[in-house]
Amino acid sequence: MKFFLFFFLLLSTLFAQKIEIEILGSGGPELDGRASSSYILWIDGEAKLLVDMGSGSMLGFEKSNAKLKTLEAVVLTHLHIDHSVDLPSFVKAGFFSSRGEVLEIVGPFGNESFPSISEYLLKLFGSDGAYKYMQDVLTPQSDSFQIIPLEVNSNTILTKKYKMFELQLINVHHGIVPSLALRINVDGKSIVISGDTNNKNENLSALTKNADLFIAHHAITSHSGKFAKDLHMEPSQIATIASQSTVKKVVLSHRMKRTLVHEKESLKIIKNVFNGEVIFAEDAMRLRL
Image 1 (cartoon, helix red, strand yellow):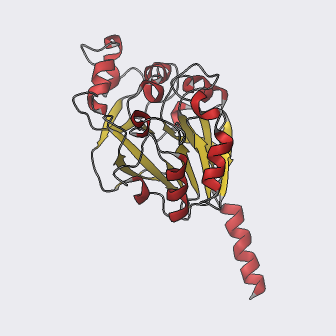
Image 2: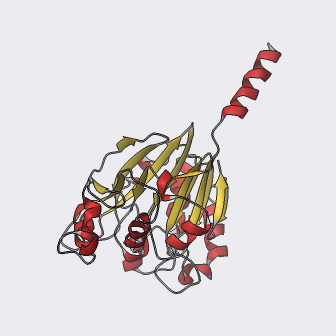
Image 3: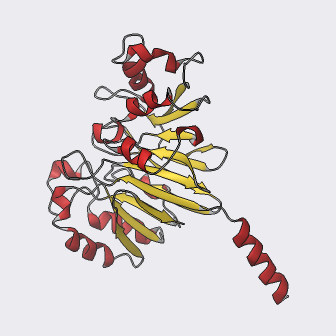
């Protein structure tokens, strides 16, 4: 019996997928020496999912030796500049890559203040778009690869299966900004990325149960004003979600000048409630699950 158990564990180890999340950008929308929000899911040494494309993310993508060819999807959690501005650069780079397969761009719905992901791609690459010279990327006749939008507008979890992983998506509250959070499920492991939210509608909590890794955007402190708190989670909120969901590890990202000087205090607040590991994100940091 012991032999068979040992043999089973050995096989599980030999054939288990190598799953990593890389933080391309751990900063926010300011000149702070950090790239803005962006994350890569690596499976067995290949980049499979790119989440957010903040400023500096394309350079980080190149430095990590990731390839556009291997991506199965892109998610933009919302269309603030510090989460989406490098998208045109990535698409242009595709012309010089070996990718030919369609790439799905997942993003939120629109409102009177922000375009939907479909409208956003048209405003960039449509016939009247800012980069209309590249309008072929919205068609099967693209000189590189076609990009297609997938719009998320739901207060219940939407599940999308890709070849190597599964995505669970839900809209979250981020002031007037249509936004979403996501859970990545792959080979029995799970990663939740909060995006920017104050969790007012409590939708984020629907994704975090028993997550192996919870990447929470720590963009404000407990001292922040009312407007900031309508956009982002306080440290105590992050701690409560992580604790109640029995998350294994928390990574605090979207670090800003206003939070950097209070990180010891934020860590103490979180650790008073959450017993698991808490680490602060750094650009180019890779975490293996």
